[in-house]
Figure 1 (cartoon, rainbow, N blue to C red):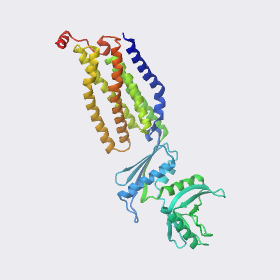
Figure 2 (cartoon, rainbow, N blue to C red):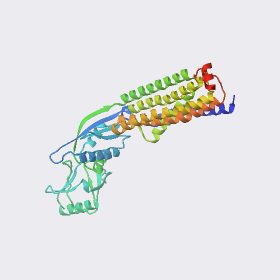
Figure 3 (tube, rainbow, N blue to C red):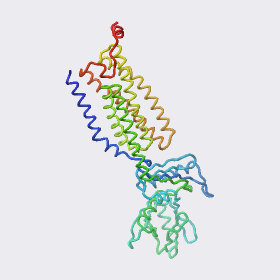
Figure 4 (cartoon, helix red, strand yellow):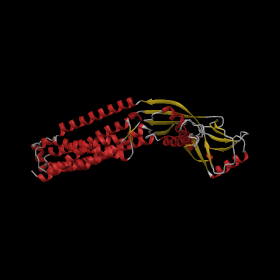
Amino acid sequence: MRWNEFGKFLVIALAIIGGFCVYISPLANSIKQGLDLQGGTHVVLQAVDTPDLKVDDDAVNRSVKIIERRVNELGLTEPVIQRQGKDRIIVELPGVKDPEKAIAMLGRTAMLQFKDVSGKVVLTGKDLKDARAQVSQGNQAVVGLEFSDEGGKKFADLTARNVGKQIAIELDGEVLTAPVVQEAITGGRAQISGSRSVEEAEHLAILLRSGSLPVKIEVMENRTVGPTLGQDSKDKSVKAFSIGIIGVFVFMLIFYRLSGIVADIALLLYVMLLLLVMRYLGATLTLPGIAGIILSIGMAVDANVLIFERFKEEVKRGKTLRSAMDSGFSRAIVTILDSNITTLMAAAVLFYLGTGPIKGFAVTLALGTLLSMFTAVTVTKFLMRFLVYSNLTKNPAFFGASAPKPADTQEVAK
């Protein structure tokens, strides 16, 4: 027995097993979770025509961008905002605590207007440069406005022409405040009072910063996924994952024995690598994504099955374990590439044509397929080489192979 080769096998195998036991839980918990796993709100918004504004492709696309800015300003974790069909927008807000407030902000047009005493619109939200929630000297929540250069000139002219008169500041046709102008304001800044709290002022500031929607938006569907339901889905997914991977482990051990141990060790590394890549890509894990991971585990084992079956065929023909192993890897690689490339093509089509959960499934399936090729072609090969070269046993039965028949041995000798 060659202890040097067997020692290499043991060191690598124990390092992978130890790393899996230590890091698998932190890795799994560090990946961002989607709506279906942690709960939250699913909203369907629809753009509708009005006498003044008609829905078209450009208006819906701009609405998506504005809603994205509003959601990002709310500080929500991993929201999903995407267009659906001609005039609908899907918004998923994982972990949102107050869905009603969030929905009210998403669908609000937020058309800001400054009107003089005659009702003429002098400034709009397009003239704004920034809007921030502040606390005034009277300890009241206000929204501080900063105008663009052009907007500052318009505001200075508006206040200069209306000293001693009221100017109305309206949002979506509702008067927020109507102060009496005491003197011309030339600093390019103003304040909107009337907010009942700093939080309300902050929400108003977000609406103004993100800009007004180009068309009217209505809430068509509002579905809330509770944290309990999300946790239940997560628990069932973990259970399904555990059952699947244990089943694969047992299958490989029964049919391939020492080779199966090698495949199982490589599979542990594969799972860790997949979670690590998903974490650093910032991927969001959803139920379809978990399904993609479980399916990709089957793909990873499939590559090992192809290699080991070819290995068994070579042993049966009378080759030595070392020669059979080299032939098994070299001859199976073409089949492995063919099967995985077709899977990657299917994943690419799903990602390109799918939306939301379908894309998540496609991403995890594609990542899993690529990593499975890596672990099968490199990790499994090196571990098998160290194990076979160590001469731990020369009995093919320990690798799930049958001893060669005399006729097969003579044929190989010829």
